[in-house]
Image (cartoon, rainbow, N blue to C red; front, side, top):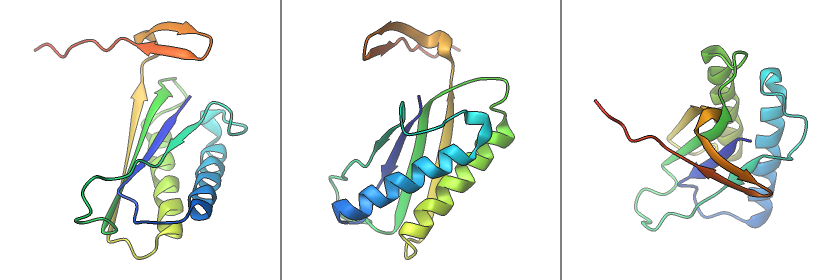
Amino acid sequence: MPVIKVWCLPETSETKLNELYNEIVKALRTVEELGIKNSNGITCLFPTDMMKFGIGKEIIVEVTGLFDKPERTEKVRQELAEKLGQVVAGSFPDIDLIEVFVYPFNPNQVFLLQENLILILIEPFVK
């Protein structure tokens, strides 16, 4: 159940965001190892930025909630990052920099799964 967050987008229309969402879903579906057949279970967020300075210069894409599985290798995550970067670049060709971060998620960190509610227990980092 991946969650895709696209940060620092320039001001844009709802129509363009819907188009971007559809292109993101298509990109996810083309990475066979993800096993994604449709938009079910995909959350795509376009948070607004509180600071206007720099908006439209750089876009950051984060993929979280992507369950860590043997078939989802580093190469597969790299392919996903490249495809998402291409999708965003196609929608916003004037952006100076696009960064894509794909974070694998260990399903053992799920604390509770109840209907539509997922609580995640994150272990504190200890040296």
